[in-house]
Amino acid sequence: MQALQLTEFKHPPELREVDDPTPGPGEVLVRVGGAGACHSDLHMLHDFEPGTVPFETPFTIGHENAGWVEALGAGVRGLEVGEPVAVYGPWGCGSCPRCRQGMENYCVRQAELPVAGGGLGTDGGMAPLLLVPSPRLLVPLHDLDPVDAAPLTDAGLTPYHAVKRSLDRLVPGSTAVVIGAGGLGHMAIQILEHLSAAQIVAVDTNPEALHLAQAVGARHALVPGPEAIAEIRALTGGVGADVVLDIVGVEETLALGAAVSRSLGHLTLVGIGGGSYPFGFFTVPYEVSLASTYWGSLPELIEVLALAEAGKVRAHVERYDLADAAQAYEDLAEGKVCGRAVVVP
Ligand code: NAD
Ligand code: ZN
Ligand code: ZN
Image (cartoon, rainbow, N blue to C red; front, side, top):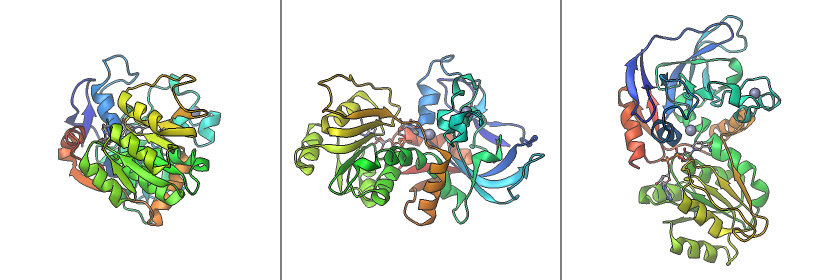
């Protein structure tokens, strides 16, 4: 089969011919229905010097996947061939306390593992077939189309987790600011809309992203800069935002997030732009909590899928054939994707 592979770091991905995988004992083979192109792949492909990431190349990229069960390895029970499934993306050891709580994203043994998930050190979903190491990583889809479900496993799940941990801040009268209204951001807005009473403000440099942000529920859409800071102050009666999700993560967006946070607020860093912000007594208002979040838990994925099945959230999807998968990443890098690019092998 053809697969879009990372052959070496700091190198564009390549479509290559690889062997079809077969499931060993305990494994499940999934026929990929949709594989989302995440901006994190661009960071993985281009930002790291060879040797600084603990992954061995080559491997097939794509860590945001859904499809149908194609074949079951020996001993696998509880799944039917042909059943539609979403793939829970962070693959931990499966047996530490965090993994057993469904938080494989925070596996205690992650540092000892050579892979972080399909598409992250081992073969992912940018291919017709994906080998999943255990049925514990699959969630049944019921009525959702795998193309729509794929983005939910990361672009949906990651902001879902970030929003859920801050729900106690998002009471009536509160304000949530989403910086970066791309693949994750446009899902964050819908999740905020359906989980909270907050007024939602989107901030993005790209006018098309701001347009989508408003279409999916942002009450205000702003271009970053001093005027946006003043505007957010004005929209919050001078006090600032209760929750800021920085889904870009460069110096400027973190500084913007800090400038518009109110005391007791949450400033949550989701974007992997590589920026940092000095934390000190006088750098943020009193009792602002700064946190980074990585992906989400398996129970949270079940909740995101339920939200989508109820028609409350839906990824805005731009489809690409597998032959054009490399183009999807080029378009993503150039800011030409509105919502999420999903490769349909
Ligand atoms: P994306 O390219 O789809 O969206 C990024 C958006 O940010 C775009 O709309 C872009 O116009 C906007 N943007 C860029 N620079 C900006 C700036 N300076 N100010 C305001 N807006 C700006 O990317 P995505 O797939 O949604 O991923 C977003 C970020 O989240 C990436 O850094 C990605 O690596 C990261 N990510 C983190 C996790 C996690 O678990 N923490 C999971 C997935 C993705
Ligand atoms: Zn991702
Ligand atoms: Zn573990």
